[in-house]
Image 1: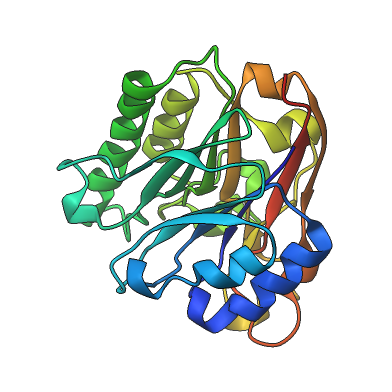
Image 2: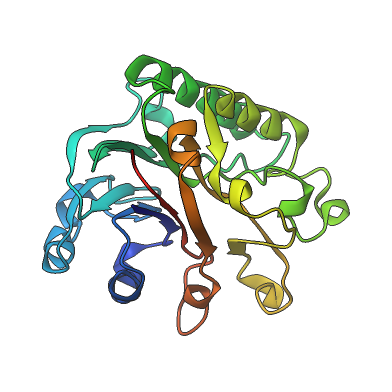
Length: 257
């Protein structure tokens, strides 16, 4: 099974690019974030034409998450309940080909002194609790999305330059590690140990061409999937061309037991 995640930064602006990527990458499951669409506007028909079922959770403003699958789509649930009402539409889950898949868009946090920063930490803690309430680490589970956290210094272009900022602060990394302690493995790191492997680059300052990025788009999987990983890729090609997202797709291949 090929499981992918992509923060598209407006599906309305980038649907054609997503369709093109699906045609050549052929993911079995694609998790999308920042669709910035309302549920009524989501292009289910465009994905159906490619052979995919889809589920979406969005209100037409910011955020918005989706799961697109060609291996089945059942047991769809959206949000975390009342706990995430003030954080917007940031989570959707479904069963796809025997795997419980979650597409998540973790809050940004804005700055270390912002009220949004502790809310980000609380959201990650709530995500861990939700996993405990709805599934088990013994099952095939994949939590995919834009986590807005670079797990360690290998995952940023210059740790010194980013010191004191969100995405790299110790509490954020500890919150991510605590989420993983539920029973999740950073699948890309299970495959590749190199530094300088980024999935997001700021639009400003020519960051992509200067290789000034972060790896914040993650696919966290339970051990039953991690044990069967065969390949993974951060597809830098999709960050090139006209009007790209500031993120690029990440995918892994795993043999589902």
